[in-house]
Length: 334
Image 1 (cartoon, helix red, strand yellow):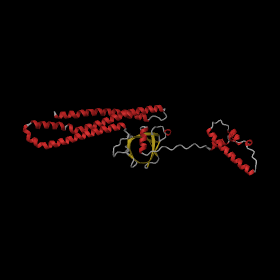
Image 2: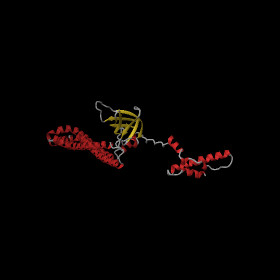
Image 3: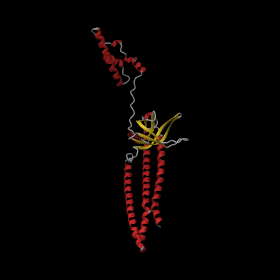
Image 4: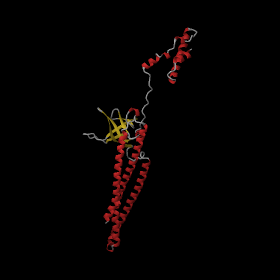
């Protein structure tokens, strides 16, 4: 009867934990399948479609996150409750047996120190269970409020799943890795989640040199950023799970924004065609009749033409294309 009572006490929590486990596996499979479809979306789709897809992923991630927290919480409760579920009924039985059996008074006196010690140990175990339970409830609450900011001591600065672009002779593929980054030593560990046929890959470790956000129009995938390492030449392209996730990885790796594109300079043919444009040609009749010594006339006319030409070019950059520059320059020079 005592064993049955203990089994009933622990069995109820085990059944509840099994139900939580099934719900966790179901929600996890649903979330990761949706996440894989979401990461394969092209960045060329409409912004409204992308935002709707992001909202659906965030909703499923929230459901999976709560399910995983409940499952971990239930595992901890079952493991801790095993410490007293069996001992408490046995202790109660022995207490009743020694109390109502007058023939065992001497044995009861001999057992009393062990009984007191067992009671003290049991009380300490229950107090530890209660305090741990309260701490887990508080941690679960804080992780629901800000899941990305919770970090256990002694753990990597940031960790999670990333997709890596791998180039082959016949094209490009994306491999899924579980990555752990330690900011203090700038060390990135990558464990492959998908093993290639006929090969067994181990954990890769790199020392980070730099991290730069990938421009949206430079790649068909979303949430990408490039890193450079000491061990490999060239950049390694990584894909995060979301925009917020990419921001966290880049903040941990001291990532930078991509450099701005240089302004487009005019090519030789364009500059030559502009110089041959009749609107930029100053006719002979537009030259002012300047009196005075020949040397002073040449210097004054040259400065005047250069000043008016620069002014015309400035006006061209701000005015509409149909402005007649020939008339403008002739009017200003005249």
